[in-house]
Amino acid sequence: MTICLSKEGCQKNNISLAEALLMLAIHNNADLDTAQKELIKKGYITANRDDLFQQIGWRLTNKGTEVIDSVIVDSDKKQEPNDRLIQLATRLKEIFPKGKKDGTNYYWADGVALIVRRLKLFFKKYGNTYTDEQIIQATSKYVEGFNGNYTYMRLLKYFIFKEKVGAAGEVEGDSELISYIENAGQEENLRNDWTSTIN
Image 1 (cartoon, rainbow, N blue to C red):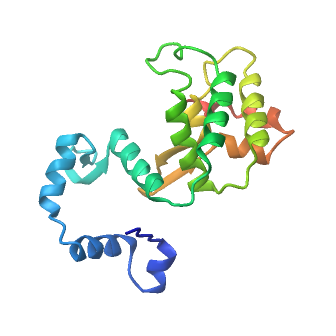
Image 2 (spheres, rainbow, N blue to C red):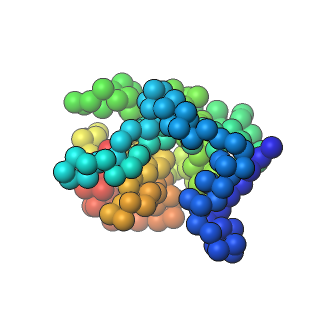
C-alpha cells in the first residue's frame, strides 16, 4: 500500500501533518516506544537540545535524513527512468573535480548510485521539468565559475540540493542547480554571492 500525505490535504481536513502522521501510526498499531528505541540504536534520530542542553524533542541525523529520503523515493511509483539517471549522474560526476575537497574527508562527487538517488530526490522535490542538457549546462557553468579555486564550492550532492533547518525549525530547501538553471546567462551575479556556496 502506498500512502501519500500533503500539508494541503491535511489543512483541507483541519488537521496538521503531525496529527495525520500520529493518526496513521495509531491506525497501523505502531509501537512508538519500540520504534523510537530502534531509531536511536540505528543512529537515525538523536536528541534535539536547546542552548542549555535540555532535550526539546528529537531530530533526524544525517543518516536518518538519507534513509527517510530513500524510503520516500523508493515508495514513489512515478520515477524517472533509471538509464537516464545513471547517464546524467555519470556526466555530473565527470564535471566535478576528482578526489576529496581540500581540508575535508568528503569527496567532491559521490558514487554514481548515490548521485542517482540524489537526482531522484531532486526531481521528487522540485519537479521533472528540467532537461538533462539544462542540468549539465548549469553544472558546468557552476564549476567553471570558480576558475580552479574550489575553496567555496559546494560538493555535488549539495549543489543539486541541500536542506537546512531554518530559524523557525522548518526544513528549508536550497538548490544551486535550480538557481543556475533558472538564471542561465547570469552566472556572474550568482558567483558573486560566494558566501552561499560554502558546503
